[in-house]
Amino acid sequence: MQYEVKRHMTRESLIRDAEHWVVKIGSSVFLRDDRRVDRPTFASLMRDVDLLGRAGHRVTIVSSGAVALGRERLGWPDDLVDPDISGQQALAALGQSRLMEMYEDELAHYDRGAAQILFSRADLDDRERFLNARRALSRAHDFGAIPIINENDSVATEELRFGDNDRLAAMTCGVEQADVLVILSDVPGILERTPEQGEGLFGNRISRIAVDDPKLDDVAGPTDSDIGTGGMVSKVIAARIAARVGAPTIIAPGKRTGILETLREGRDVGTLIEPAEGDELAGKEVWLGAGARPVGCIRCDEGAREALLHQGASLLPSGVTEVEGEFAEGSVVGIEDESGERLGHGVSVYSADDIRAIAGRQSDDIEETIGERLLDCVVHRDSMVILD
Ligand code: GLU
Image: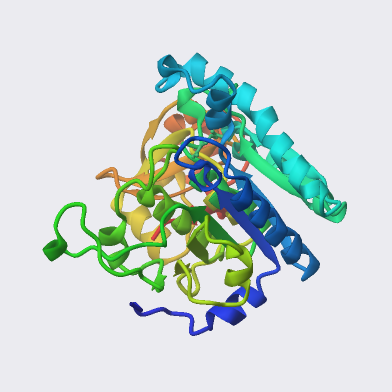
């Protein structure tokens, strides 16, 4: 099944030209039903990763499995099927070292090291840390190592999580300016879902689809397994985040032998989700669009909404009606219209209190009101991403 796509590139050229791959490996890919590590699948994947490297591609792996391997280490005790937060954190700590051991052992066959990087959500909220991560990852690639990324589960708090590794992988595309995101799972790809098929029933695999195709909302099906988190909805969200930084996403069956090689050959496997033309962010926008998480919100009136959406304008104090939350100058904030619709987000020039003080006023009044005038606007256009 082929929905209309905006970019008329063949799969082959799209993948061949993709220098940098981010490959997300879900726990269900390298665990078998009997909950043992599926060594042949894992070995095949690492062989593929090495082949990609030899063919001149850079590969970064975002790997789940810490919590599952922690459970495995303890012999899958019944009381840890659904552990509380600290239980999960301890399982992740136990399993993460096991996970890295697996990568280290398998990649050693190809004389490659496994470079572990554990991200916390806050690492990507801060532009300096975001750029630091980019530099460290780039050096790891220079060393011929394969970066293995996971969320820093053992210290993550509920409010400050990526949520799932699909999203983390998409954000990694922003950090690394990657060219393609491959999400390996235990499903063949996105399956069609029509009302006639009824709840829980699916049709054919969708081969290619544009990220802005409304049909994508209907096809976001149920979770693929209960071993990992996520499910198809989170994969579609991840594809949307990756598309913002210009990367197509392929959702593909991870247990299929030689899957990465098969994809590199441009064969029709899985579902390719293509970014819409002209949607790509650049420079600082990448961090804003794929990394940073807003810590507060500025609401604006109808005039400002029009100017932001259609005239490429900065957000001026005169258009601000309300400020939500407490934040310092330089924080990433959401921008909403009066009905609460999210228009975009950007870096706030002033603190929440200062913006409250100058809300509704002219830019000329800024200095008189808060004692200094850094810029005429509260969010500058160059530090803003408008959502469509
Ligand atoms: N970070 C989790 C783990 O390693 C997995 C999260 C996910 O699969 O989305 O177990």
